[in-house]
Amino acid sequence: MTVQTYHAPRTREEAVALLAADPAARVLSGGTDLIVQMRAGRAAPSSIVDIKNISAMQAVLGNDGRYTIGAAMPCTGLLRDEGLCKAWPGVVEAANLIGSVQVRNRATMGGNLCNASPAADSVPALIAAGATVLVVGPAGMREVPVEDIPVSPGKTSLAAGEFVAEIRLPVRPPRSADAYLRSIPRTEMDIAVVGAGVSLTLDEAGTCTAARVALGAVAPTAIVVPEAGAALVGTKLDDAALDAMAAAVRAACRPIDDKRGTAEYRTAMAGVLAKRTALIAAARARGEA
Amino acid sequence: MSKIAVSTTVNGDPAEFLCDAGESLLDALRGSLGLTGSKEGCGSGDCGACTVMLNGQMVCSCLVLAVEAEGKSIATIEGVAEGSVLHPVQRQFLEHGALQCGFCTPGFIVAAKALLEVNPDPDETEIRYWLAGNLCRCTGYDKIVRAVSAAAAELRQERSAA
Image (tube, rainbow over all chains, first blue to last red; front, side):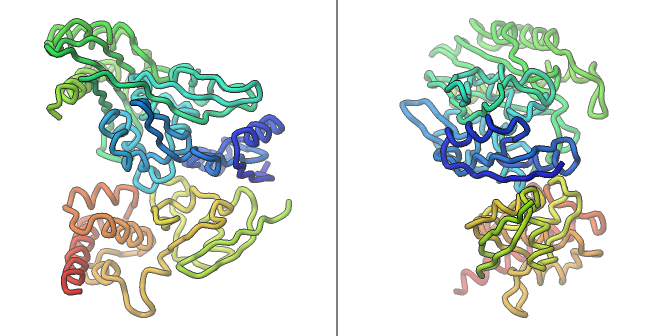
């Protein structure tokens, strides 16, 4: 089946009505996954609902320390918001590891999330950040934690007619920072073998008071590892604390073997990467990086 | 299925074409508009041979729907030279022998020109990262990187002379 209709609604309500009216419709954001899937025959939408023309869908709004990012904001657009880059360097760097410049000029965090790839780079960073999304649908709006959107490779928890309109980042306490690292065999243009996102807060003495650790490419979805975050809280991120965190990370891994890496390698690497990521986040929180 | 009429601007001139809902911008450029400089290598956003500027941002035109061009401004390889005067990036590609089969070249030229517009003095690492989305299977990348570096120097000189 070929695409019959292209819609470019101007409002969320219009988009919801279009999606609800056609169960085989697909949301178009940056298109860097959807259009590839259409060409490969893996997606055959009867209509396309392009959400980019809806107000604020390609904007970053800061308000009292909170950030709201339109679901169709291209990854490179995030770099132009200095406040966002300062508050959430890990989220911005994760989104800007995706693909090439050409791809990042189109690709969006909303699409990265809803494509539901276990290896999506921005998703572990958003989960570590404690981000939520605003889901809009026929039954109204609901705010959902990012980690509850993907349910398995390629599948989301979104109901018929629903789409992600906004990504919301919470207020940052002082001495907080985040970071994201991924492991790939090259330096650019590759898919994560492992991804690790860490967001943490330190007190004035440098003791960690809050931490969230999230992983990509080691389970059917990106996952948050509460035990790994807990291993850092109350410590100064000394070696023992980092080792305990890495052990919790490895224990949470349920990876597959594929051409990019074996399950064993991914599990071992997840611990290593989470440590490095935590150290970067801590350095940033101390104002050192 | 009825065709969709799209009004856009290509290389500074108004352009109109008809397309299908699922048609790529690349296919519209090459087919309806006859601008065959942009190439289709992979069709999946990996090779960059189809790179064009869309409202000033470089994108893979194979990953843009033709209908999305409505009201936008597109710049393709055909608009890089001014008449018969080559852009410094084009001239330096020739002088450095930075192409063999030439299939990837339009994408590299458009991408390199875009780099030099935002970063007039890129180092080698910056050039290589910026061009990571453009694949060449003939020459290797050293000559391409040297050509871009030389074009950057030439453009800086032009600017300081102006």
